[in-house]
Structures are given as structure tokens and as C-alpha cells.
Length: 214
Image (tube, rainbow, N blue to C red; front, side, top):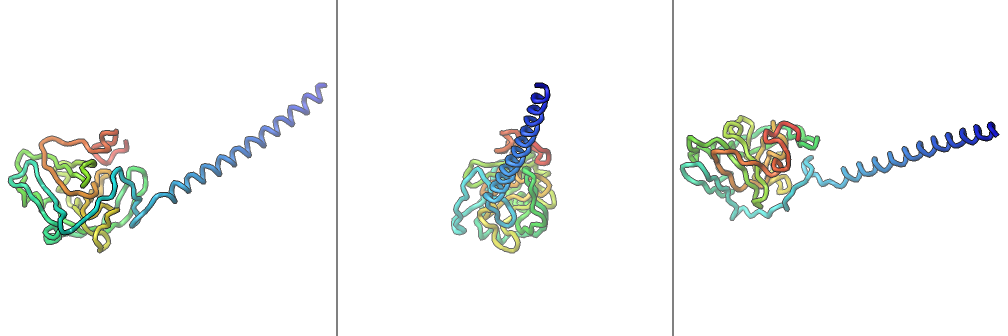
């Protein structure tokens, strides 16, 4: 009886090991498959994963305008043609998403914020700048000092082509040293303020500094 019990226990142990091994393989296949589907299901343009809380807006270069208001001597309204006629700069910088992916050496062309600030006449008590997307739903902000950093740009071209709508065209903020959620897409309004406005994702726990993980 003892031998039979011992034999049964060994068989049971082996069966359990096989079951766990097969279960591990099965779960591994499922996890790998889900990871594949997750990656394959994401649309990419110019290496950027296309994700947004908003629908991609339409764009008519004849009617589009950029507004700069708030703590300024005079509110600006700039047409797309006028924007393209302003002093421009080009740069090649990396883009980093808080999700962990990145796009290296992105070529941008656009306007430095200092150009617009000088045109509008930023008041002495101004400390922050808020960038609004075309839908009015998404926004984020920088300090005036951050906005004047040498590689911060309002970009309207990418890789020598007009900025695709899916990548934030006709105009997006480029702030290379901060995560992507600070790089507001579809910018059509910029507001100069005394106090800093909390951005969309920051209301859900993202860090306002744009460099720390949530």
C-alpha cells in the first residue's frame, strides 16, 4: 500500500509539473500575441505613434489663424501665410514619449516663441505661457523662461515637408527636453499668464515639469 501511495504521488507530481509547464507556454504565447497586437495596432507616421484624446482637426490654410493673447500689449492674430513669412529656424532633435518610446533626430522647421513674444509685447508681470489645441480640449504650459529655451520651437514643417495633421499640423509645440505630452499638437492659441495653468494630462497625475515620470 505504501508503494502504491508513493507511486501515485510521483505520477501526480510529474503531471502537475507538465501542467504547469504547458500553462507557462500557453500564457507566454498569449502575452506575446497581445504585445504583438498592441504594437501592430498602433498607427505610426514618421515614426510617431498616433494617439490622441482628440480627433484630428481639419485645416484650411486660407482661414486658419494663430492667436496670442493674455498679458501682452497687443493681441496677435496671425494667418498661416503670415506665419510662414516670419523669421524661421530649423533644428534636429529627439522626441521622447512618457510611454517609453522615442523618435531620434527629427528635423523640424518653425518659429521661435521669442519672435511672437516680441511682436505682441509680453508684459513685465507675465511668467507663464499656455498652449491650446484647436479643439479647446487639450492644453499645456511652460514658464516664459522655458519657452525661450534655444531649442523650443513652434513647428510647421517636419523633414522638409509641411507638418502632417496626424503629427500635429499645421502647428505644434516642440520642447525636446520634455516628454511628448508637453509638446502640444494643433496649436491655434497661445495665452500669456501670471500663474501656471495645469495641463490636460497633469490633471490626471502627470508631472508638470515634463521630465519626471508620473
